[in-house]
Length: 222
Image (cartoon, rainbow, N blue to C red; front, side):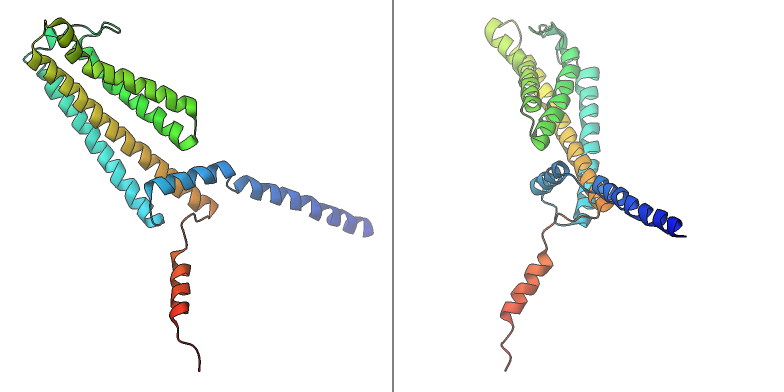
């Protein structure tokens, strides 16, 4: 009986480190906490309920802007490119892309640049932000290149290149906003899910400050 009791006593302390290790695995890391605080500070939600509303709103706006970008490209480039003189626009100096190819390349560059810039900002990575900046400047070059080529050569009609650059700029702005809204929605969804799973609250306690102010205003007891 003594030996059996000794075995039970030895097993109890062995279970405690395992439970502590499980709690450590479930606990948020300092990196995740810093990242969540950065997202909350930038997007300024007041509580978890507002986070849910912001997730839905940004995802809906992202879908609407993305669809608007696709429809604008289809109408102004795919269907109306011939009537707007896209065939008269010279090929790009970098890559020899025609305008139809540029209308696909520019939004792709903007999407990648927006993602890289967002990752670099949230994680504090200089190299990632640097790549995003390079891609953004390259997309801007392709957008303004028709106007620059008209200025240098004078072989293209001014209205044609102005409309071409305007279409590329519109596509770039729409896809940038759609991508940014979707990234913010995904980040907020991650913050909300993480706080619920780990049972933590990163919002300031407004109720406590309100109770303290009421306590200060209370009249002294007789």
